[in-house]
Image (tube, rainbow, N blue to C red; front, side):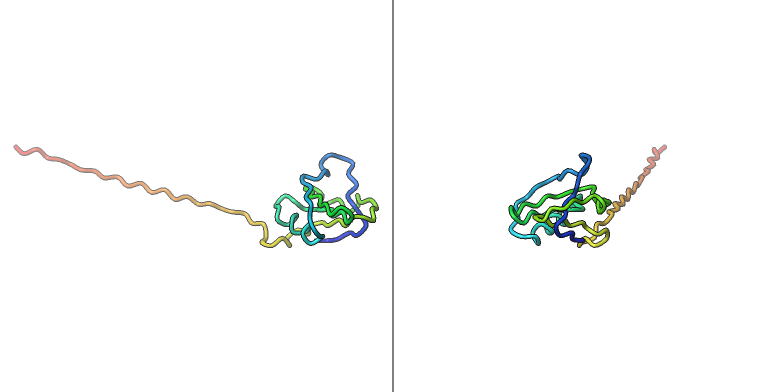
Length: 107
């Protein structure tokens, strides 16, 4: 995750609101909380309260940060989440068998 110490998201619209706020003991647990959620791509840790705000849809918010010395904002870097997000493909195979029987009546 990319860290911005002393900066927080400055949201001008509702898509930047956190989808969750969790109480954590330290910044590492805030990072883990974000990385454990597939939709999370940004988090802000408040040092004085140990609150951690989790954000979705903030990957292009680097230019929309405002100063706040109590915060550390972290942005997930695409392709670095472990395990990597993957696409799952399911293949279903169906087989059909037909049995034909012929009965001949005797004369």
